[in-house]
Length: 118
Image (cartoon, rainbow, N blue to C red):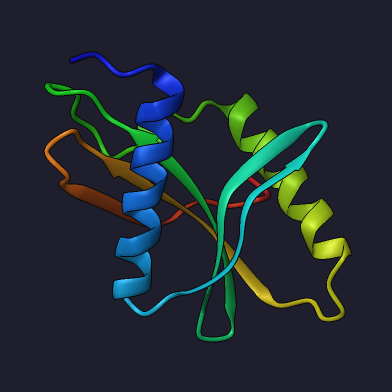
């Protein structure tokens, strides 16, 4: 049975969300959207805010998940992160992670996948 890309992405996001909670991260926000971009998950890892991009990987696709995130996509993520941070009372340490989820449920979590100033 074939799933629509939206359904596949949502299922991957659900799995990644649960996985990161199991790894000790605390959820802050999901699907934060601004005109210029969206962040799938915003989590807390101790005192650090983690902006997470979730990628659904098809069978046979390899790579560390970051391979599919273009410079343009990185700029949109950074813009959305900046907008979210403007709404906060403090300026926490931050990082950008990527979680790639395959149809068989395996996860590849790339911490600090890129920096805002890359």
